[in-house]
Image (cartoon, rainbow, N blue to C red; front, top):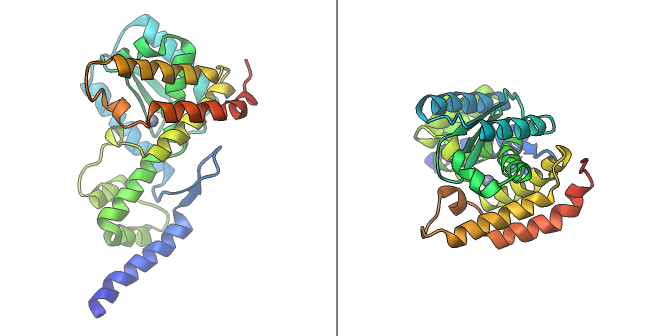
Length: 261
Ligand SMILES: [Zn+2]
């Protein structure tokens, strides 16, 4: 009985602290999310991980790809509220059609993505979607949920000690392993939220949001034609194409209200 209480009390304290310090509202979305990382800690993790990636992965010098990524990135960065952003846009030499964004405003685009994006609007759709994950702080939310399920009591103790948040080392310890932000998969709910926010931000940046629908249609065709049964990780972790295209079409009138060509 006493033993149970010893575990139950910290868990109870943790639950109330999460309500106090860890509940935040996702910008431009009315969803409340649990996230007990500090935005500055998230940014530090993203910036450090991106630095390592630049040191180990091959960076593309293709002038066309780089110019397009800089242009789209510059326009998006002006309308996307990323906490503690040190914006950087890098093209990596990799044939898989992929892109990613890390907290701190670090964005990577694979050379293999351009066969699908095909134009600036298509690239804005993918980059807008990826940075929307950062705006909504999805990786911090994933880490918070992961830490809760793996080591709720241990993490809770640290929350109590620090009151406002955790540093990256504690989060990693809570997960039981060094977590890699760029390899975290997002939930279906997070993906659909990133689609909506991505369309909204591309509209604010002056790109027609309907380009996002075209982009996901091209991704869908790519997947159907792809001989690989599984396809790249980017496609595996995303919701069914039909679901996201239908949702985006429904959301278009909302995004269009903010479209400034
Ligand atoms: Zn995504």
